[in-house]
Image 1 (tube, rainbow, N blue to C red):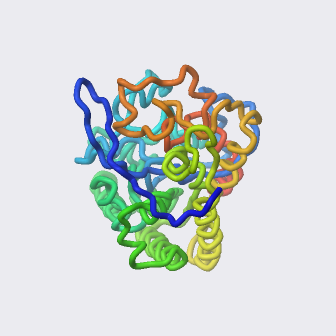
Image 2 (spheres, rainbow, N blue to C red; image 1 turned 45 degrees about the vertical axis):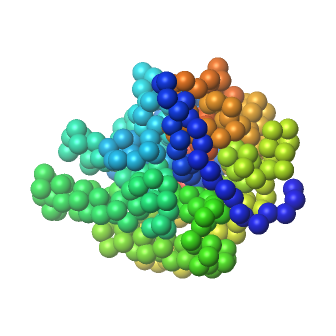
Length: 381
């Protein structure tokens, strides 16, 4: 693989939008995230079976893997509310999800029976009922590190997401009273999917954090931020929280493109980057174990191994392509670089990645199926 000094240059890239060329700073979103695998006869479009349980809301925090469209409502270049995004979503709507269709959190919501898809909190048209059954506060491009979000385009920091949750509680209290609001929160399951953007930003050039911290020290810094965020959720009433680990970062098409010695003809995962994610994941699991006594349920959600399995055994999952995206050349396009002018593959279900950073709906569905034992653990009474 050759040596890597993590001196990545995330340069500005040209994107064809309409008749003009837009130059945008490439911000890193995430694949970061989500859960483990097993086979299932369910289809992606099927109504999923309900668990034998009382309904619990689902509240989501994190990055682009769980952002259903919050970035539509803020001033940022980190958007995808335009074709070809959403091509395989119901009614082919580009909702602001960084994929061709549904996200893992949408499959979870359908599976547990609260709603078909998780909406973005910033959608002011949501009814009180929609709010009480589950929303996502996530923002594509965000991270645990407060410096990550500004570097990626002014997206919503995870601390700001927590502030939105406090605002959300106030809205519920006004609409249904304090006691009912508290029951909604205490009965809810919380999902946190973040961290990939932080490591990608650390490896990027220029990187203030790399000047301040060695890689091991930065991982410890991130875990301190994770602990603070989980403590903040606990103080707001959260009792059941799932925390998603990091994916094999070296398998992201963008990382392969920018850092491979032969990014066109010999595309393969770069273990120097994935190793950083593996080490972080182990440290995260250790940290969560120390925090478990404070919560009713606190669990780590595996994402690394399922995605690695898809990369190493593509035919097992029906994939023909696992190191390039479906959109454009598949080498570097995502967000505004994947746009209505882009050439798109005919069948995204044959691809692990929709764009050069984010998984397809098919991949998210396999990830959801792997996560089902953990989902059952959280939601079954």
